[in-house]
Image (cartoon, rainbow, N blue to C red; front, side, top):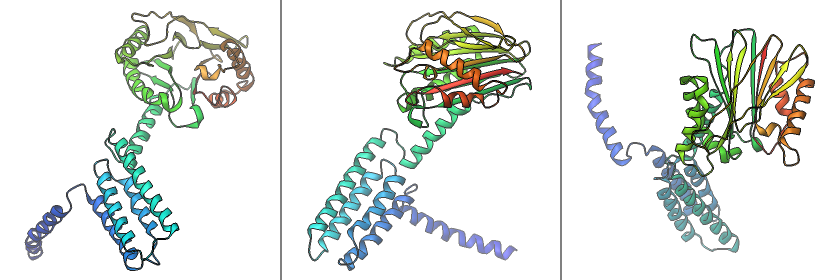
Length: 365
């Protein structure tokens, strides 16, 4: 055992020397670049040795891999290296035909496109695949903000979200919070100005900020604080609408406040009728010191409450009032006797595919 340890210690200095020499040739973090350079050389050699057999278009492979894997600092230099290898491949051709001229033109055009892409990526500072994974992570964080926390068995709460054009990013988002050791659910549905990917970046920021405010402030202070936060951003199109629900999970008593948002709708299980709770409050991010009225009510056994965005009820050919009537008619038909899965059924059957749609269904069993 001792002899083996002594041998390992004796070998470790030599391993360190090899590692240091390797790092001199290939600086830390440039392993991918070195591998792509080696691949480019390996692809170019057959073109130089057998110019009549190996096509120059083989250089597309390392160019494509470089555009996916390299960062904005490394990618321009790698593209220049590929262009140099392409020049060597051209010089090795015994005869340049019109077909080869077209292939060469396309290759240089691809190099130019990749260069432009690298300059645009420099604003983000990460490689293509890494940047995409960051966006996916941010999107997942938005969706996790809207996850409903565990509730008592007597309550069913469902959310459904669809973005314009089916893209994974939307201007509509939901934030739900239930503070520890409390019997109150705080939930807000927000519609950021714009739609789809255009509003997605603002939704990324606002979902985190509103989640922090929702759990830290009394219910009456949330919308004023959210309004002040948006005003401080100074965005040209930085307004948003919202509806905020504060629900007591023991008594069923609730408070609803709206900020330029479509009104909440409540189902009375006893009468089977829907009531629209019209509230007053300006759009968030436009008026300093805005005030928001409170609508109070109670959800009894069998009752339900709908919170939604204008994409559910508003289209270019239909006013929002008519859209609400249509939504409630669909709700009466689709939710009759079966509330589970009702949020998805309603969203899929209503609204415009060209607008973001979000809906929250709260049902007391």
